[in-house]
Length: 458
View 1 (cartoon, rainbow, N blue to C red):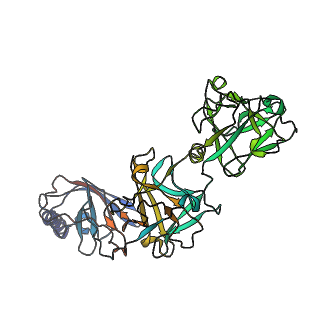
View 2: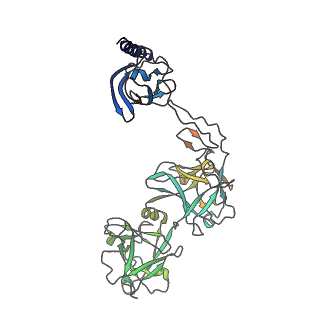
View 3: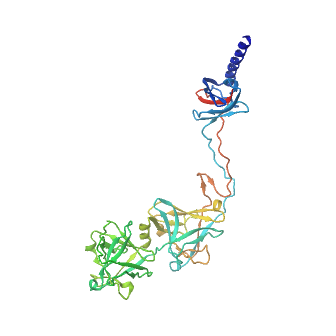
């Protein structure tokens, strides 16, 4: 009996001693079997002065022979770790310390793109446009009606850093409508029929040849289909021509959709028909002479002035409307500030600057750059239209303009990307993973009551 009392006293004194030394008060202890181990659940309350080496928690204080695993609930924003070697509970700040990632690599070398003076830029090249998605108007790509009819690449003056200029039929198109006092006899009425997808449409007519036919535009000779239909009025509206209307809006119709409609040439160009509720009063009905010898004179009307008329279609705007992207012309201000992004300009509906990625395919991760095209409401007056010469011998000499001073120009590419808003790119250093810091010594943790589970040998 004396030995039993002595053993009990040793255990009690050990627990009391441990409680004092550990600065942890253990309450609500419960024990249960967990397979071959015993699980102890309890609440640990800290005191007002944390020991920087951690607070002691030993097996004997829990009635265990050995601690195998400790699970502590995150409490008050603090994290807890058990040091199995020293038998202590370590406490960490749950939030990470602020850290500014210092750039220790080599800054990227300067890179520029050239814009070449060419008094015949409009002949040797095609207008350069920026295309942005309607939902991402700060990031764009270049489009142009490249002479080769395919996507091609332009590069910076040195290295293999470049970007793609995508092909699309964007240049303005002229359509002729010929005066013919017997238009209704020589031709068949033309109608505009929605194609069942957005604002796309086709031209239909009860062609005299009872077959599909076409006419040719004046400017670049695009072929425009006119489909045969013996009942062309079905789900269609009459096509009218307003010879003294605004250029680009001279083809009119009372659209069944209540909006503008666009029909397409075989070469892919989109041509506009403007919705106008007064189309019949403003314009004259258009007819189609499907067997006319001159293919660019097959659209006919009875002109009030006895003169043939034309309509200049602003194709890049039509393309924008149909394809759900925004295209804006690019201008170059040769005497603009040399700072990045202040020489290439746009004046689109979005007042944001537009960024274009230039990629080095030999080292995409660290050598890629950004070209900034700055928004300026006065871009057309401050700068000069940029053209793209896709078959230029020099791959870095494909951007053209008519320089007011007869000199070539340059525009800087950015020398950095930004990572997480702070870090310059180049040969980037790699930061170590962020780690929570242990709370400082003497921190008052007396408000913490941490639920814990300990698994160990009995």
